[in-house]
Length: 169
Length: 102
Image (tube, rainbow over all chains, first blue to last red; front, side, top):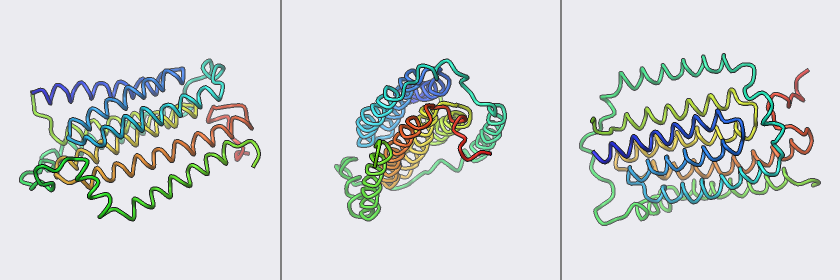
C-alpha cells in the first residue's frame, strides 16, 4: 500500500518535472524542473532497493551534472534566447512520430504485461550482504574490464571538453 | 489499489523516454536539448533497475552505473562543444547553426 502511494507520487514528480523541463521558456526553469525529475528517479531507485544508485543519482546528477548545466547557462548569455521562438518548425511532425512510438510501446506493454511477472527467481545476494557490497563485488570481479574502459571514457571526455572550451589550443 | 509491478515501471520509463524525445526533436535551445538527453538516459536507467529488482540480479545496477558514466561524459563534452559554438556563432539555437547547409 505504502509502496503504491510512494510509486505514484514519485511518478508524478518524474513525469511532471520532465514535462516542465521541455516546455519552460527559460533554461534556468528547465534546469530546476530537471532537478525535480531526477530526484523523483532517485526515489524510484530507493523504492526498488538500489540504495547505492540512489546515492549516486543524487550526488552525481543533482550535485554534479546540474551544477555543470547551471554554470554553462550562466556562461552563455541566454537572455535574448528566452524571447525567441521556443519550438522549431518540425514540431508537428515530431509529435506525430513520438505518438506512433508511444502507441507502439503502449500496445506492447498491454499485450505482454503477463510475461513480465517473473516468479520464483532465487535471490542472487545471500542474506546479510548489502546492496553496495553486492554491487561492488559484481563491479570489481565480473565487470572489471568494462569498469576500466569506463574510466578511460571519462578521461577522454575530460580532456575533450577542456580542449573544446579552450579559447586557443 | 493494484500493487506496483515491473510493468508500471516500464510504462513510467516509456513515458519519460517519450517526453525526452519530444524535447530533443522540438526544442531550439541546445541546453534544453542536452537536458532532454539526460531525461532519456534516466528512462533507460529506470528500466535497468526495474529488471534488476525483478530478477534479483545486480547486473542491471552495474549497467546503470555505466549509463550514468556515459551521461556524465556526454554532458561534459556536449557543454564544451556548446561553449565553443557560442564563442564562434553567438547563438544557442539549434536551427541557426547551419554551416553544413547550402
